[in-house]
Length: 321
Image (cartoon, rainbow, N blue to C red; front, side, top):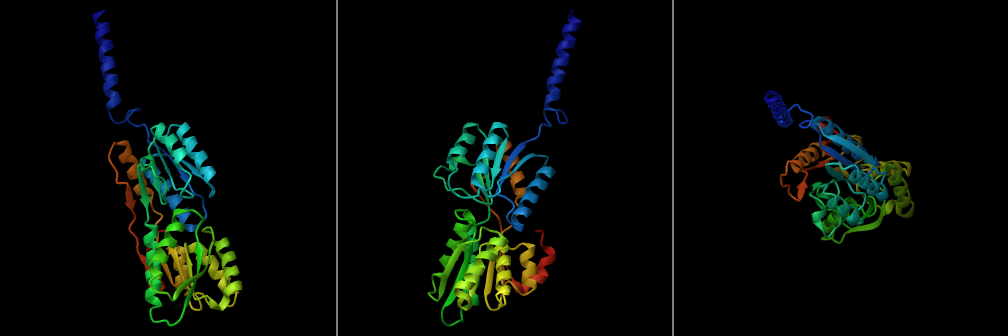
C-alpha cells in the first residue's frame, strides 16, 4: 500500500513539474490575438495586413483576423466576437475616431487588453486601451506643407490648392489636414480652394479630381492627396483632361508605397511623405510584452521620412511595400 501511495505521489509531482517545463502542452499554449482591419482600400492597407499576418506566424501567435470593409459596425461586431472567444489581446485599426467607448468598455470588463494600430480613437478615457502605435499623422501633414512652402517660396501670386481627403472622420484624414494647414497658413498666398473626401481609394480619387478639374481646371496649381492611391487616381484624371501631372499641377501625397515611386520615376508625382504600414513586428512584440505583464508607453511612434521625385529611382529598389 505504501508503494502505491509513493508511486502516486511521485507521478503527481512529475506531472506538476512537467507542466512548468518547456515543450509541454501548457507551456506551448499560444497567445491568441484578435485583429480587426479597416479593409483593403489601398496598397498601404494590403501591405499592413500582410505585415500583421506574417509577423503573427513568425512570432508563434494565433491570429484571428477580421476585415471590416471600411465599416465601423463591422469592426464593433468583430471586437465583440473576439471578446466572446476570450482572446488574449485585441488589436484594431479604427475606421473612424469616434464611437468606440461602449465596445472598449466591454473589452475592459472582460479583462482583455486592447492595442490601437495605425489609427487612434477619440475617447476621454485612455484607460480603455493599452497603447496606440503608428505614425504621427499631423507631422505627415506638416512635412507635406513644409515641402510645398519651400518649393513655392519664390512663386508670386496665389497658389490654389485642391485637397483629396481620406475617409471622413478617420484619424489620418483629420490629422493630415490639420498638419498641412498649420504650415501653409503662415503665408496667405496658399489657398485651399476645394477639399473633398476620396475615401483613400484610387477610383474615388479619380472621380473627385475630375469634378475639381471641371470646376476649376487651369486655376489649380497644387493637389494635396491624403494618400498615394487617391493621388494615382487623380493623376489619371489630370492626364485625361489633357494636362501634365507634376508639371501643370504639383502633386503631393502620403504613404510612399511602390505605386507612388513608380509615378515619381515616370515624372507624374512630385513628392510622397512616408507612412510605414509594416507595423506587424512592433505589434507582436507589444502583444508578448502585455502578456508578460510589462508596461508599455501610451504612444509608440513610427519613424518616417519624405521622398521627393528626385530620389525615387535610387530609393525604389529598397522599398518593401
